[in-house]
Length: 465
Image (cartoon, rainbow, N blue to C red; front, side, top):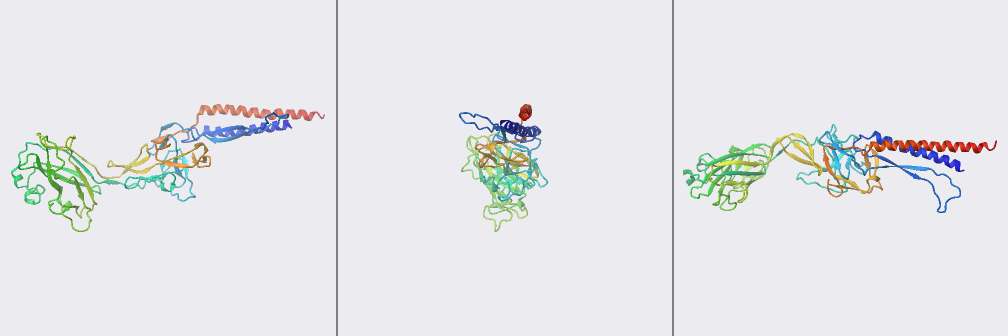
């Protein structure tokens, strides 16, 4: 009977609009939830009518389906922590319920909720308790990225980051040697290989001398003195000795003595600019063997003394190039060390983290060193709206969403990382209140269908009396 079908249609309208009310309620309740994705309710008619029409019509009612609006981004707003992050563009953070996940039984989830904080063990997790996963940066600075293998990821743990020290690997000297310097009497008999005639021992007074500080592999400060002596017969050449003070910090092989780590000539052209090749003979690379190196020190080799307990390092010495600013020059102005550029750093304690837009999470230390420790992947899927919600603003792959791909932030279809930022929910409160009014009216109208059909059915029953 059509009246009965009308009553059933009214009931389906009540059910469908009740479902819509529930979705709207969740949206309004989560308007301030970080990374929340609103729920849409889609109404679908159930009728089936042939192309030529129907002689008698029976109501079929309406069905409702809920779907997530994952593809729409919320507004990015400033966070309160250095570990607050958002994705500016497409993609998701990779998270898991456990920081020690492993194997196929551990869920791999995706989220836009980037309000991450450290737990008691130092792991980063968001407000829903999901742990952030990333590619670890290798010791040589490389990252083993894999677009589909989550086993290459590990939970981000800040408690594993200890202090650090950087050994010096490069020294640049910016200085001038006065061209009009008169050679000393000692220059005529100068010999760097004998203590009685060299500058490292203190026997020969240099025409110009300065001490610079370098850092060993343990962050210790070591003093290296550069001594210059004007050549006795060549106006454009200077004898140079680099020697460590105290000399006991190094063990050297002949002909190096008295703490010397390099000796040679620095030559200039008639324009006062350094000649990088012969007759310049001062080495531009200073290798130091580790203090525990086996065997005797070779000829011309330099080894850190056993008492220092430090490792091997090689320092490149940059004296400049003719035609370019800086370096060592020979002009007729007072000898002066303008500046030295020395890399490396003393030991520094872990002071915090910073995140770059290409996803590198770097540790910052009190000595000014910044070291990359993780790179955050951004996961993308073909159909984000096909993902399944598993609670906590996290989503799971489904057949509708398609497979995921892990990309470096900013590559492919992936968005970049916005540091100290969070993504608000994509709920528009004005739209939700408008939908709330419409849903309320539709629910009331559906209830009127039932009361009207009831009255008509009562009339039909009264016909018997």
